[in-house]
Amino acid sequence: MSKVLVSPSILSAEFAKMGEGVANVEKWGADLVHCDVMDGVFVPNITFGMPMVKSLRKYSTLPFDVHLMITEPEKYVGEFCDCGADIVTFHPDASKDVKKALDIIKSKGKKCGLVLNPDKPLSLVEDYLEDIDMLLIMSVYAGFGGQSFIPEVLDKVREAKKMIEKTGRDIDIEIDGGINTNNIKDVLEAGVNVVVAGSAVFKAENPADTIKALRG
Ligand code: DX5
Ligand code: ZN
Image 1 (cartoon, rainbow, N blue to C red):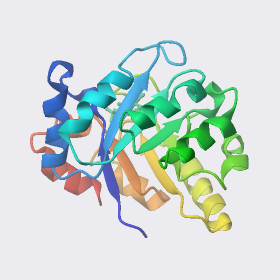
Image 2: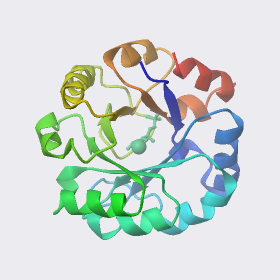
Image 3: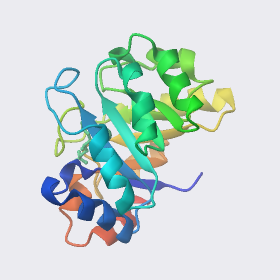
């Protein structure tokens, strides 16, 4: 299995000290920085947008893993790439033109991916397996940090792994929501190789140790 990458979600960091939060993520030994962008329309919460991503860029050399929870992502993905995103994922059910959004991200030389909420089937991404670099399976309903892990989504992870293997393509399987050191074993066994963790990392007594433990 490929190396497990840990992507701490800065949604759980102190917003008034976000630069420091991002720098800490790197200092603690993480692999990616997970940025949760919410628009208050696709999800019932608002976080931050392109200017935030742009100004955070100088606080870390780690790749920015930008998770868009916004309607019509095709309108904004290009700008997120220009602001320093390295991986851009969005929810296909939020988009009027999924292929267009993926193509814009790829044209910027960045990695693209699709995200499925717990009630969304793999059939929504089937047609795009030749295009995507990452599939993000939500293990909570997108919108808030600190929710409880929904174990049933691991069946979807196992199915996704089989589906991806058939394509022969190198597509990362990322999981997001309620991940901690208690459920990580099951999560990795199901086939995940990129782990998002917000509260588990930022509320840990020793975040560096937690990040290590999340690699399995
Ligand atoms: C939820 C976000 C997640 C969230 C993860 O909508 O996409 O990235 O911040 O936080 P925890 O790990 O606390 O569930
Ligand atoms: Zn996220």
